[in-house]
Length: 265
Image (tube, rainbow, N blue to C red):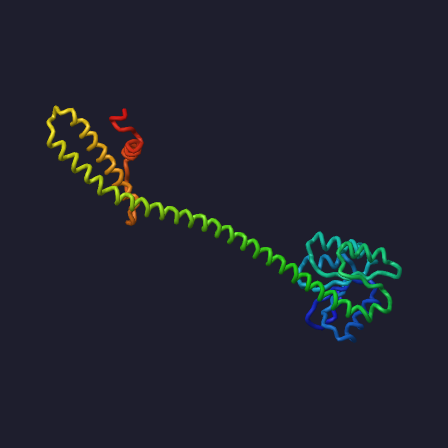
């Protein structure tokens, strides 16, 4: 490997013709370009250097006609190895078909290998590298936008779920407020029913046929009073504490709310 030191960007030149590579290095020096140029003779050698990753290369120039791997095969190996480096292919006169094939394989550009190549190559390199950087930047921005859209969609989904839960909570709060009001309103007449049923029971004799009706009234009133008390407790604003419960008692309470009164049976 031969090296021409400049600065900034690392360029790999794959060229087995020493005279051509020397002239190319000289043209870059005369153009005062900002490339550190490494010269290798074959595609195989270039791949070995790239795989070792001793140096990160910004751009590659490869001749199409090389011993071993040709330029297009070299591009295929670059893709296989996952090496994303802009590559310019040097082709001979009248090799447009090869140039098109190289572009389809992923070449960033091609240049006909003649005397004009020494003059135009530095300009072409700059154009190719700047275009590649813009494409990479666009891909990064697209990936970032996609990620942000995914995050925004997730945030929207969470907001929708939160809104639904908030609506449920508001409905429950309204229901609890309504039940508390109803419980308060029911307690006053219930107290009167319980009180008057007790007074009437104290006034009738044990064998009075009306007594059974009064006891039924009192039993139903106490039953409703107990239900209202439990509803009021359920709707209470105090923080409920965890405690042990007896499942059988809870089942009995539920059955009590749904079972018919003794008179209905």
